[in-house]
Amino acid sequence: MRFPIATLILLGFSTFSARAECIGTNLLDTMPAEQRAQIDAAVSNVPFARGFMWLARKGDQKITIVGTYHFPDPRHQKTMLRILPALRDAAVLYVEAGPEEEAKLTTALERDPDLMVDARGPTLPERLNDKEWQALSEAMAARGMPAAVTSRLRPWYVSMMLGISPCMMTQMQKGMDDGLDQLLVEKAQEMNIPVASLEPWDTVFTLFDDLTPEQEIGMIRTSLPVANHADDYGVTLGDAYFDGDIWAIWEFGRFDAYRNSEMGREEVDSMLNMAQVQMMDRRNQSWIAPLTKAAADAARRGKSVVAGFGALHLPGENGVLRLLEKQGWTIAPLR
Image (cartoon, rainbow, N blue to C red):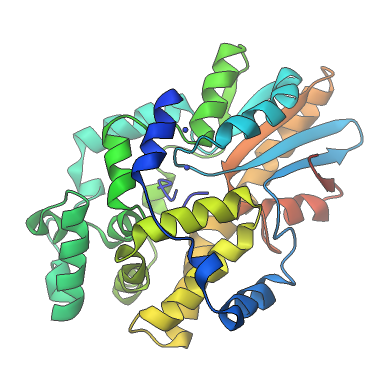
């Protein structure tokens, strides 16, 4: 599940010790019953809200779909065992960004710092109030980012970093970054299965091109409540993911922002709706054609397709599963 880079954004033997360093409280388990009931009510009518492993079929065409969690967790090993039969039958593995696209992204970032840094516009302390800037600079310092650097970062990148706890940042710096996406890619390469990308390397930089300055800062304001208890968020999101409670993750963030941000409910809803359209809905639409074409090509060879991408792309009227269903695909949980 990609919470913003997805890098939002989620594994080896070093993984277990890495997870042991990240200690937090499951906030869904400890919240008052009436608050959990609000989240459950918001999720109740969302298509495909639960589950992260699915099989889509249309005639002799098959796509095994795995909603991924981008951070290390030993529980991914069980998922890998479940997905192995589908990989053996696959003509191709599709992921959001394969090795070639990731290499292009790395090269671009090395060559052009402006992709993440705004060296000419107003600084973040000029765009936030004093209280917000203080909270932001402290949160980013805990993630290894000095205030002087943070002040010039692009807002979308800042909001993504706020969703990653300092503990998770440490894991990444130690090379403990094998999320489920990476495990799938490594297994496919080991099995000589081609790996294809659903989108180009620069997608993350184009998602927010049309945001207003107010929307950019709104992304940070919506993300700030996460920063103060990011380890708790990490545990909460991880446990919800492995429980298959996928859309509850999104609604949990909404209700937490209602309670803990300085934004009104309408402003929170507006920001989250914008984020859903920009980060999920539009991308979901663009993925359907390559997935269905690959499935048709694979079927002619007696093969199928495996696709792995952030779990939050699965649920909803504009989620990948519902979009496939609207095109005549039968969707069933993968048992």
